Image (cartoon, rainbow, N blue to C red; front, side, top):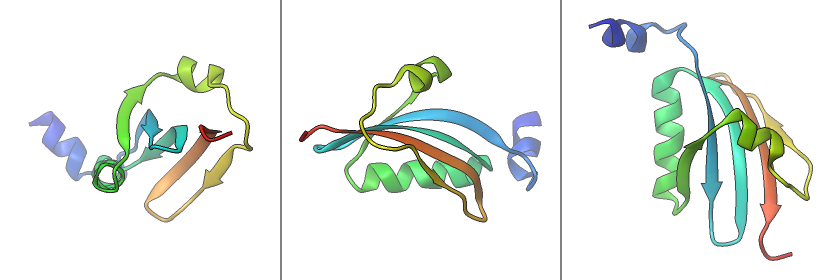
Length: 89
């Protein structure tokens, strides 16, 4: 019942790190937002052919990347920061 209350609270924010892999790119996302919005985001990535797994802050901080970190803010997800590796390089 407690989880149900959290999920329906519009002000609840969940934070996680996600590793997202495609055939040509590998990245780690630092995301925060309402749990329903994060589930929707993960579903969209998987539906578009991405492999998604949850990872840790240590993995995010030590992730080797060759491109700039990207930041995106929208009205439903408060933070998205991504570090990318271009596997074709």
